[in-house]
Length: 177
Image (tube, rainbow, N blue to C red; front, side, top):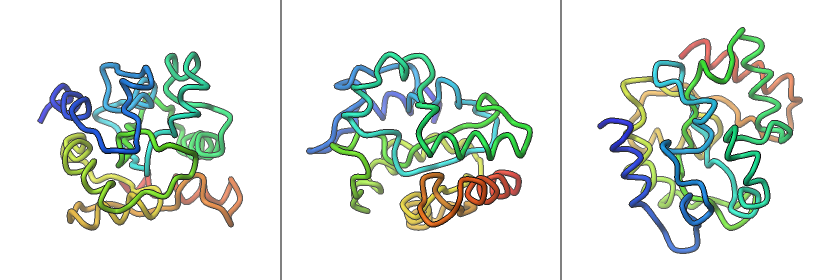
């Protein structure tokens, strides 16, 4: 499948209780807006749970429309630190959330069935033969369910570790990928 077909699949995917990218004003030529700056189809692939929640996406529309991410949130501060350890920029990697819809609130628990449906119908088409890095348990469990070879690491927003420790773990996983 091509990237264009993956975008078409994302546009066709919806589940009750979630907001589509189009409904939030983010229907672009990407599968996820974070790919505006992290969409290198030949770079290492990082897969996380989701892109953002609907209220945060709507509240930060101007910034997100330009860069696809919020630099100040822990996820991105840790990821930027991990990339710096490797001498990489966001343009060198490809980020793909397992779940392509916007949850109704921040840190919304994602049922496994919803993650699997999104991955099966949309996100699996973004692998392009790469061995992804699964950032966090939601991504790792979904990839394991579909028998996708991957490297598991912590989620950039995981609690219990310092930003530095999380960044080191993610950098090591990206290096291994």
